[in-house]
Image (cartoon, rainbow, N blue to C red; front, side, top):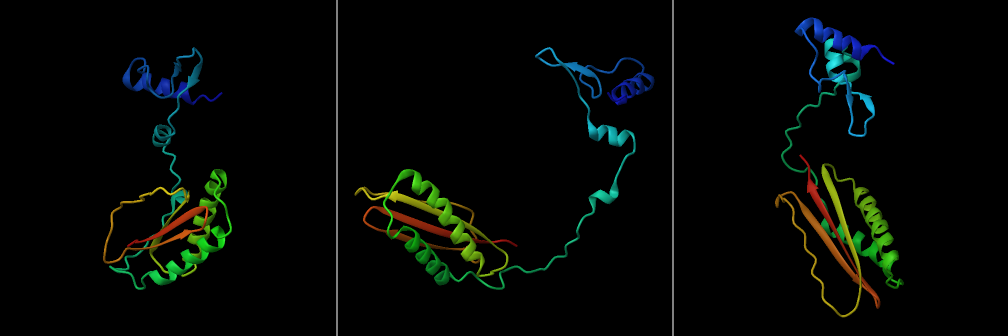
Length: 177
C-alpha cells in the first residue's frame, strides 16, 4: 500500500496544526457499505509534488483560414441520386418485418453516409436519417428541427415505396467553419 495518504495527513498536521477534515483527500473514509477505501486526488498530488509532464501535453497550433463560406457546395441532385439508388437497391424486393427494418435502417444509413462522403466536399458535417415503415393505408408525418444557416447548409430527401413498405431517407449537410 502506498505511503502517500499518510504523508499527506502528516503534511496537513504540520502545516495547519491539527487533524485534516474528514472529507479531505488522502484520508481513509467509510463508505455506506461499511468498507473502507482510499480517496486520492491525483490533481492535488501532482500540484503538491510539482510533478508536471509538459512533454505529454503537446498541443497542435492551427492557424485561422478566414474562410467564411464553403469553397464547394454539396451537389443536391447528386445526393438525391445516391438516395434513390441506395433505397431502390436495398428495398425494392423486400417485405416489411420489424426486426429486419431495424437492422436495415442502420445499414442504409451507413451506406448513404459513406457514398456522400465519397463526393469529397470539405468542411461539411453529414447527418443521415432513414425511416422504414409498413404500408397499411394510414398516413404518417415526419419532421425535424435544427439550427440552420440557409446560405450554407442544405439537405436532400427521397422516398421509396413498394407493395409492402416505404422508405424515407434524408441527408443534412451542415457547413462547419
